[in-house]
Length: 524
Image 1 (cartoon, helix red, strand yellow):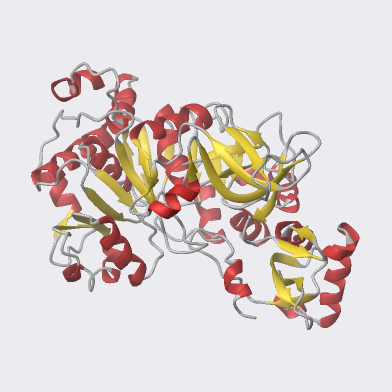
Image 2 (image 1 turned 180 degrees about the vertical axis):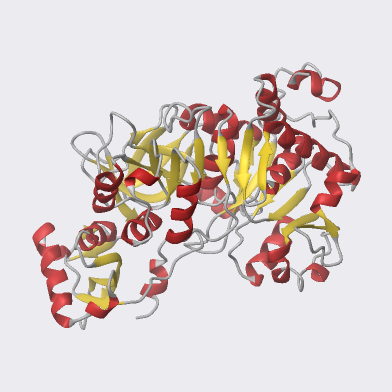
C-alpha cells in the first residue's frame, strides 16, 4: 500500500496533501527495507517495518484517547526508538508534537506545559519525577503516558501501543500544516516555541541531509546532539530515515568515555557533534583511536568551530569536520562547509536553496569584509513563535529570518562567525568579536575552552575579559595568565587581548552546550 493509498480516504486528491510521517515510513517499506535496522538502542534493534507498525499503533492510540488534530502532545523522552515512534505517531495523526529538552528544570517544564496547553504528556520514567508535582496544576493536561517499566500510576507507552491495532489512517494534512514545535534553548531569554510545518522536515533532508551532509542508505549515524534539538532531530531522524540509513541512539548523557565505547561497538560512519564535545572528546584519554572508528564524515554545528579543534580532529582521524550554522527557527543547517569547499575558521557558504544577507546597524546590507547581523531566507523557516507576537515580528521579517548572529564574509566568500549580536564588544570604538578572542585562546596548548565577555575597567570602559578552563587545572598560575595574554597579542590586533583572565573549572552553558556569556557578564 502506498502512502497515497493509505491516506486516500482522508487526503482525497488535494495536490498539496502531504504528511511527513506517512511519507517517510512508506517510502522505506516500498524500497524493501522492512527488515532493515532503522534504530539501534540499548534495548536492541527496531527495523523499518517495526517502526512503521509501532508508529501507526501509537497514532491510533492517540486518536483513541480523543486527542484531536492540531492539539499538542508534550514529549519529554530520552533517546530510544520510542522517541521517533511518538513523534511520527503524532504527525501521522495530525497531532502536534512538542518535544522538549530533557535536561531542564521543573520551572521550565511548568512554563512549557502551560504555554503549549498540551493535552497529553509522553515522558520517560526516569524523567517523570520532574513532572509529578506539575500534573495537577495543568488543567489542559488530560493524559499521562510513561515510557518505561514503571507507570507511576499512569498509562505505559508500551501497553498503549499494544492495545491498538495499526490503522491505515493518515490525517489529511498538507505540507503547510503545523507538525511540531521546538522550544529555543533560552540562551538569550525565556524559551520561545518555534512552530514548524510538515513540509520543512522533508526539505531539510532534500536540501542539506542528502546533497550536502551526504547521507546514504549504507550509513550508520550517531548524533551527540539529542533528538529534541533541531540539530539532533535532523541528524538522528529526518536525514537517516529519508535515505534508509541506520541510527544509533544513546539515552545516556554523551560523555567522551561513553561515546568512545559506543563508537568502538557500532560502525558509525556519519558523526554529528557540537564544538564543545569535539574539544572534550579529543582531549580525553578515552577517545577512540583512528583504527577504532569508521568515520566517513564528521559534522559540527551549534556554535562556531574553532580552527584548532578542526585541525586536531583532522590530524587524529583523517576526516574533515564540516562546520555549519543552523538555528531552531530555520530547523537545520543552512550555512556550511562541505566537501570540496571547506575553510577552517569559517562557517562556509549557504546551502543551495537558502540565501543570506548581512545587515549593518543602519539597516542596510554591509560590504564584503564588514560585519553585520545575519538574515537567512529559505523554505524551512518557522511560521512564528507561538503566542509571542512581539518576538515573532522581530525575528520573522517577511521571507527573511533574523539569526541574531554577527558574521562577515571574507575575501573568498566564506562566512566567518563574529559572535552573537548581543555578545559583541566595542573596545576603543572598534568592534571586537568574543569568538575571535576565544579561538585565539583555545589555540594555546594548555586551554580546553574559553569564554570572553565585556567587562568594565576602573573608568567604566568596556574591555575584554576571559574566563578560561585549562586541560590540566593544576597549572593555574599568574605566569600562565600572562602567557595567554601574550599569545592572543601575537595572534590578533593588540587591542583585542583580554585585560583580565580568570581561571574556572567549568563555564556556564545551556543544555545544548552553548556558553551562556550573559551569566558571566552578570557577575560584575
